Length: 328
Image 1 (cartoon, rainbow, N blue to C red):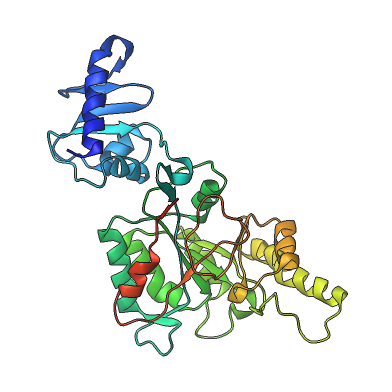
Image 2: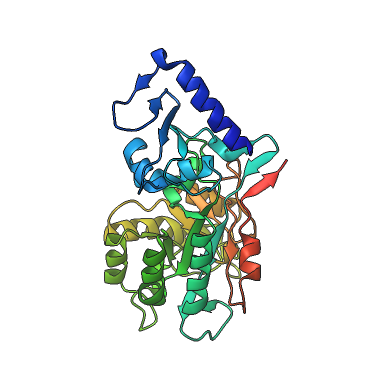
């Protein structure tokens, strides 16, 4: 018997023993009791983690709390299901290590790949299917931000999906597949590319994607490496250039798209202390680089790591990117 099963059994026994001190839920279940920390129910026909989360955790999207507690075991009629009322894993800290969150970065998606930066729609769907079938849970940047601030627990297999630049394929291929498999995503755009031709998104496209629930955030104005100044650039010229690339960009995007732009992805992953200071000063709350690796809650929030997903013949390298735990 696994440690979760033993813990579940112990909780059932302790809840039963302490019945006078507990709130008993008056419904036609063989067992349904609650404490401040747990609800224990016997599963009925049709019960799933999502239906139980909708009833007891105020949202089907919190099904991961039940799944994590059960180590992903399916729920069958007659099962005793222990439902934690609140997650207990801020920072994903365990006795032997801590949670880390992989952020996947895509660029273009095509029917036939013409470069390593453009993966095929077929491979993209294979990767999303793998994530779904193996219990990975997509999270938003807002959820990631709260995790980094030690304010919110995340699913054990949390993953972030980002797509950079603003290619039209985001609308034609990525968005439909992301919705099909139930994954949120953030599209980091550089504004000089928007409306630039048949291969780029338009402002109307971006507004439509936002209404579909996707996130649109900042990737600079020109996509130049901000840590590599042009030859003979004066300090005043550099300050003005960074203002345009970072501060002015935020204002432009908020004016054109509505809502707040809070996240900045450095082009080519390039940043230095001056760039980071400008990003902070402009009001962005997280900065995303391009160094390989997953992210613990205690990482510098303006120097996050991301995995670049390139065109490959199979899923081997993709699976290696999905690092979700780091041993101490």
